[in-house]
Amino acid sequence: MNMQASAVSAPPRPTTIDDMRLPLVMMRDILLKTIFRKNVETVTEIAAAICLPMQTTQELVDLAREQRLLQATGTLNANSGNEMGYQLTDAGKSRALDALSQSEYFGAMPVPLDVYREQVARQSIRNIQITRDQLTRAMGHLILPDALLDHLGPAVSAGRSILMYGPPGNGKSSISNGIRDALGDRIYVPRAIEYSGQVITVYDPIVHTAIQDAPDDPNALRRAKRFDSRYVCCERPTVVTGGELSLRMLDLVYNPTARTYQAPLQMKSTGGIFIVDDLGRQEEPPQALINRWIVPLEEGKDILGLQSGEKFEVPFDTLVIFSTNFHPNEIFDQAALRRIFFKIKIDGPSQENFLRIFALVARKKGMPLDEAALVHLLKVKYPSIDNVYANYQPVFLIDQMIAICEFEGLPYQMSPDLIDRAWANMFVRDEMIVK
Image (cartoon, rainbow, N blue to C red; front, top):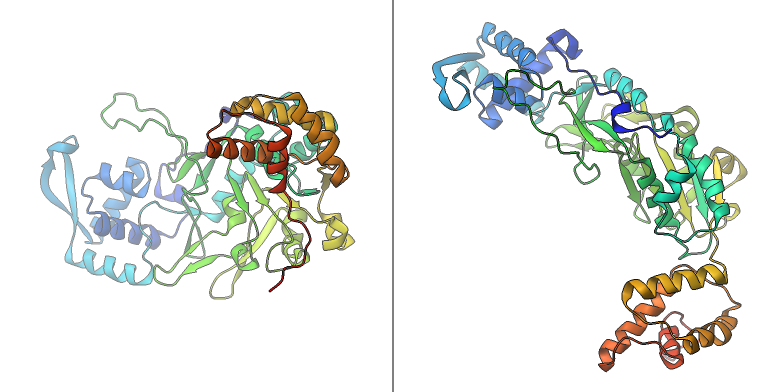
């Protein structure tokens, strides 16, 4: 049974400073920097800014007051439920500026790496079991041979690496996206994690799709029990890379100005899918990319390094999908292929499925079918390329005919002549160009 959102255990909210499992000085400094940068005054505002419960935030505020870094303003804020306001003392401002010179990070308290590991285990992609019906529904917009689902289903359910290979234009990218849609549940992504006093930002609104949730009402008699707000509830992430992928993109990204780190792509995809499209088109050879993933794929952990040279382990809980137009034996040695758990060939459609795709696309685009045009296409044009069909071709040909009709001022139609004109743009003939 596929896991639903409710089946993923939410990260528990810390109720005391001790629950945070972070260095006390680090928490205090992030508190001071946040107050300084965001100009927040009440405990409610501060708690929202550092993403902690009111009780835990109050503990940090009291600690800063004891150290004479914060002081009460002596006035009640009518706009915030008559809460007492707080401001930085001169010593607090000095400490905030000193802390900012060491790291510009402020806002949400980071999650310790060990705590993050616990949450990754609770929502592991390997906990998901996809049924044939679920995968079929997710792939419903695609016309695929039944045998393909026989191979895809176990691969997705296992949460192991997948290599899809075959000629271009046959839907490898679309199949990858369908796999993503089949997962369908939610996980919790930390805004930032902490290791050895360093902050690594993880949540990325470009990669992660947050699930909007009703905020707590601080004035309600019974407040809803929510998860640790240092995390963001998201759809399982999907990171898609192509020819631009390089080995350095798989390392921590250090910002020398802010003195913080950003998680690499594969870490942002934790709990979801990492798609490497067009494998073989990158600067580094495919063998080098696979070598980088040997330990993560086999042991479920990745090794990252800080600027200091210190190495540490992070969870590698990602369904990696490689997609290539090359034959695997051309770009990998047998050791690399052994480490990719599933190898699935994606061939072009049969003539029957090609016609089904053609009719489906024509109906969507408002292009009436014409028997003479189809006979010409199948009996004259395709024999010239040995009857090799590809899934992209119906869309290409119909879009070409639509463009011709619009240019000529004709109603949408297809004919043998229009088929010839569209076909001429689908391939480039081998010919000598005179310079």
